[in-house]
Amino acid sequence: MKIKRCFYALGMCIMGCISACNGQPGAGSKNKLYEFRSMAVEYEIRSEGNGTRSGGSKSLWIDDYGNKQSEIRKETTSITMLGNTTTENKEEQTIILGNLVYTINLKDKTGTKQDIEVLRKMGEAFAGHLNSTGSSVREFTKDFVEKNGGRWLPSETFLGKKCDVIEMMGVKQWIYKGVPLRIESNMMGMKISETATSISEEVSVPAIRFTVPQGIAITDAGTLLDNMGDDMENADMPMEKIDMDYSAFEKAARKVNISGYTLLNCTNDEGSYMAMFIKQTRRLLVFMAILHRCFQPCHQVQREQK
Image (cartoon, rainbow, N blue to C red; front, side):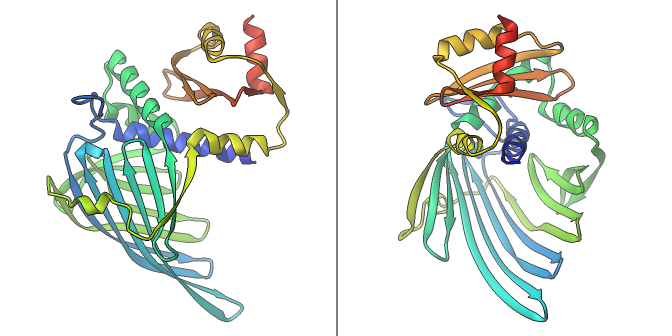
């Protein structure tokens, strides 16, 4: 089950990269993840169901075309069980600075730092693929939604902004320039909503919004693939150890022939190898060898190509 959760999380991250990768690489080595330079959004958040009720606020700041992002979420949750009610207050912050993501618990003054460079590389690979096929991010996303059981609904105006409206997997979103302004979900007895109450574009965002607050004890969580690798190593899926350097892995990946799929790119993140294949139906297939180990299905594909 850990493997399924791991790949599901990876797929959601990839979709996030697709949604944000709206442009070509900008000046220098930075990408323009959004078409706007900066944005500030305030939200009201609510959820209710299964004996729980919560409410609060969320503040989102975006700067440098998405290379700097910060979100502060304040929420109070009440849980009623067997006639007893308990209340929990949460105050959390997420800061994205280039390839680094800081996840901070502002209540207990702790946090983690993680390298997500692999997601940037995925975004760049998808952008290159879209450019080669002449497709836009919006066209790609619309095609993906409709081919995976979702609905692309008529545009609506929300807070004076023309939004794309998407409904998929029980979640309805109103998206403006890649940023969800409204989210509604009603699944498994839980009603969840995030609703923007104000939005400002091309504003000056104070540098302190992207600075880790003083007094926070930060733990280095490594890279995204490191954590995925830990989950895979603890899973009950059969594994075989392999002795393969990255050049051999890349060479083998380029020889793989899967009907309808083309190789996007290969990456090496400190010994964690990844090859990404994409199909024209907008479905993504990923093979990974983590820390010089390859799971049996991936290993079988490699042997079949010899």
